[in-house]
Image 1 (cartoon, rainbow, N blue to C red):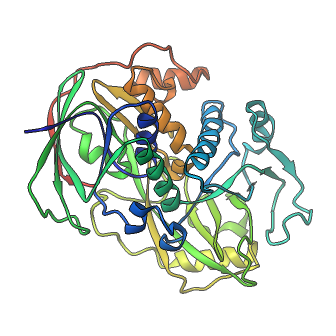
Image 2 (cartoon, one colour):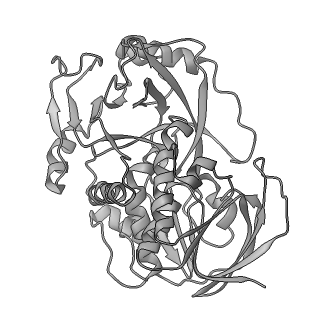
Image 3 (tube, rainbow, N blue to C red):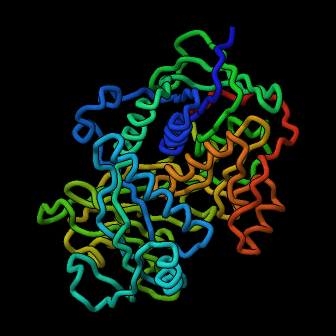
Length: 427
């Protein structure tokens, strides 16, 4: 017999966990199903800093998009609210520098302050950041913060549990059936760390279903919801050590190359991001839009080896632009998956009982609390901003007109077919 629950969240990453936190804060009965096991320290809520690897991400406030800037402001507010609730620091405010051949720099410095976000142009010749070499004028955003991915997600989980949210780890969703506008049936199976099934399937019946699966979104709900084309890319990251052992060697950096400048001929992508982590810096090549990294057809497939030149290109970049770090041609690389829609816009919308959030690329943590709030709104029938719609016409029209917000009408209940997922998928 299926277990009855008001709202079920599939995917226990930062966005899904934030959604559970915001839903539970409103008094909604909510459970989260997550394929991965839970680290023992997560459950205890103790010694998280020591238990979690310093996988770095960042909350960037250096935006010029008038659709995204309200979400930035909401996210910063909600991150602070989270810190107050759990009594722990989540955001390490180190500031951010955005520089290079970036046509949006002037606009960032003008538009962001209109939304209460500090941003200013700075001269590359100054000595304000002696550990960083700038090739152009830059935008400085003092509120940009470094964040540990697992650390932040664990804190969101603590807050959600304080509000009575339930989490089921080691649980993979294998089938979703939509039974009506206010009813969905979800089949899930227990799995081990490698994803192998280790027990009997169980069923959950819910009034609302929230799906936040990143790279696995299309694989699980593609037969149910007409999604915009999503591209999954594999991005390589290296952790470099500060030569003087400084715990905060640089601010968060976003550096864009000039395609006409031969100095950037060795770059593997148009953009590089560097995030300070304890004892060093995590540095990644990133693309734009669908070309965010190496294309991935199946997120469950064994990852291909990083390009041979990836480590050497990062080492060369470090020598030229971040001389305080210690580069190495043999620096190990860590891979992660980024997902983005073809038009570059986020997807945050609801069809019948199913709400979905996907397409955040490297900005997932920046917007996680605000997107969680929007997902909680969708569950109550409040539409998300129109550019994030699943409807192509509404999505394109709102983006073209510059109008970030649709009417307050309830979310659409377009016909949805029932279909199984193609295979056990990560949640």
